[in-house]
Structure formats: C-alpha cells, structure tokens
Image 1: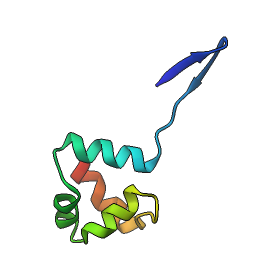
Image 2 (image 1 turned 90 degrees about the vertical axis):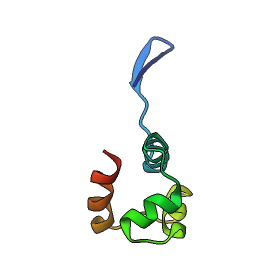
Image 3 (image 1 turned 30 degrees about the horizontal axis):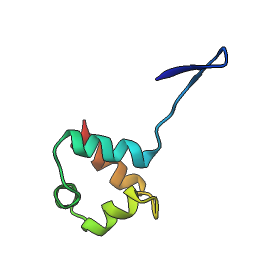
Length: 68
C-alpha cells in the first residue's frame, strides 16, 4: 500500500504478526483451528501473533498453503 505524506510517497509494510492475524481471520480460522491444521499448539500460534516467537522455516512452509 502506498501513502503520501508531506509530498513524499512511501510504502507501508505489514509485520509478520499483522499478516498472520489478517490472513487467519480472512479464512475464518481461530488460533486453535490453525494450530490443529499445522499440528501445533494454540500457544505456538499465539506466540507468533504476540511477537514472542517466530515460526521456524518448516512451519513457514506449512503456513503458506493454509493461508493462501
């Protein structure tokens, strides 16, 4: 998304946390639902959304098809 402020154009980038929440909710998935589909605990998804941890590469690979 582009925005214009004081004559300058820049981009607004969403964080991993913001993207995860937005995509999960767009698919009407609860944290429990997503965790179950990934074979993880709800607490793991909660930690990602609260930026207390990040998913490892393997979990990122499984997130892609779940949220696309």
